[in-house]
Image 1 (cartoon, rainbow, N blue to C red):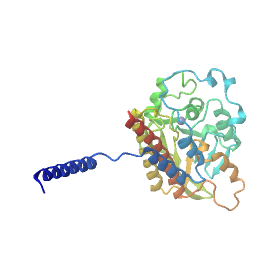
Image 2 (image 1 turned 45 degrees about the vertical axis):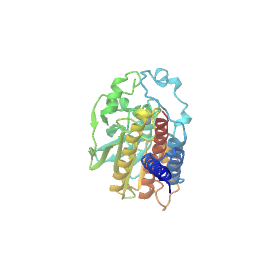
Image 3 (image 1 turned 180 degrees about the horizontal axis):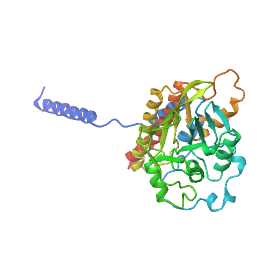
Image 4 (image 1 turned 180 degrees about the vertical axis):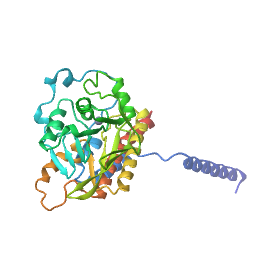
Length: 347
Ligand SMILES: [Zn+2]
């Protein structure tokens, strides 16, 4: 072998080694499309037929993108004639458990938990239907709205806070909400016109609202809004205690149309879902409630109650299905987060 040949062979080997080293150092190219498809498939598998509304809203429908910084009086407040037609939102009230009553509408929920010392109300729907659905609904069910002692607002959007000012004024009920959402209400006086309860109880993580021997435990779950709250509590089904996990904010309403801060916002949302799934597991929750009946199917389940007979309670889906709800939310958020990571990688 000539010395020239040896030299060129060594050069070749060195070049090969260098190329191998580079290949080892270069990150493997991410297949964003495959990652996205896997996350959506995981959400679909978790949803089964139980959480189709949640799947559609968080994985399929386009999401609202930017931050809402407008401070306009909503149309339905400025001109009540512009409120949506009654048939689009009216639902009959229902006694769902021995001590938990549905007084919401077709799309948005409001729940009244009765205790020996009064009522804890969870969410208050819109200003244009809270009087009929909550006050009227309670009266139809034989409950006295004057007994509302606490109102817990899952978050400060008009479909949940709409009746809080009216109920606070009328019945002197204490209002509980997350600190950032109290701030939002104060920051946008026009947006919350007729929907701005006076600042009252600021919810903190693990806070217990106790009345007449019953307790609703509050968990801060930022994401949908910075102050979104979720809960664990119990109700009685024909005298038997059932454990409930309540999810207070589901759709991706936060800024999510740019990698920064969208990726971070999705992570906050995902972390909250993981946290709430753990809280639900810790109390062995077998019932999942949400503040939209498209997510927990409340409107249809209320109608199924009438034909229940000796069968299982239509809301009692079991611990595994409660966990699956939070998995759908996490997987769909992860899918959307992957798309933003893809965009970030492309710039
Ligand atoms: Zn909302």
